[in-house]
Length: 255
Image (cartoon, rainbow, N blue to C red; front, side, top):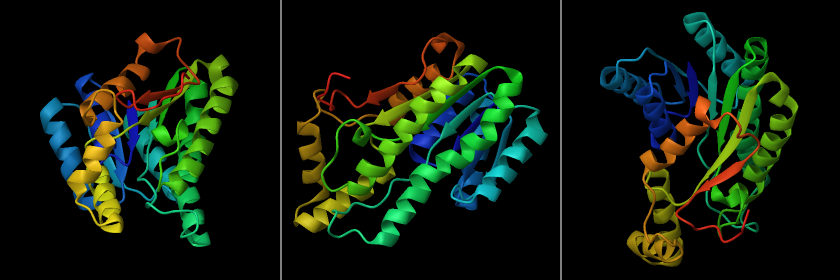
């Protein structure tokens, strides 16, 4: 049984699809009820697995508690948790307002804290669990124009490493995955924002990105999701505390 956050579209939806393909029951949440309901219905029809969904603001601790509680009432247990949230806006340090820093922290750090606080005690009792956080390659290599993501998502990586060490004795494996440039609506929006700021076309922005990717192309959401599904499986039983780049070779560091 898997909880997948921010799963109405993009990488979250791709992960939900990959887990459903492996036979996992799902609990999906996102902010937009209409989009979420449509996604849940489509996944259920395609894969034939039980799918529960509820519109949830991941920055609201009580809403997350209610969502996880309802999930356990429905399925009896949670075995897998995938923490995910939309990325903060593209901006430079000089342009970023204090409220934007607070919002990014709530969206990309505290949303993870809220979810794992609800999942970990339940996983402890059953002595089994998998938690995967979705962040960005900015954890490993800062991206120009993404100061908020560069700063805040690194905190999630530190949280993951700490929790992995703390909960390993309970057979709970916790890992972070770091997508690079992957063909999602979020990337399309980012290309449009950067293009407008630089006076070029979105296609030119994408072409520049691809020049820095050794594989020479954007990633596909299903390629990213396949790695997450592996980390959630029994086959990944000796993998914990990692931050894995799924980026076509974009990150130049050796770790």
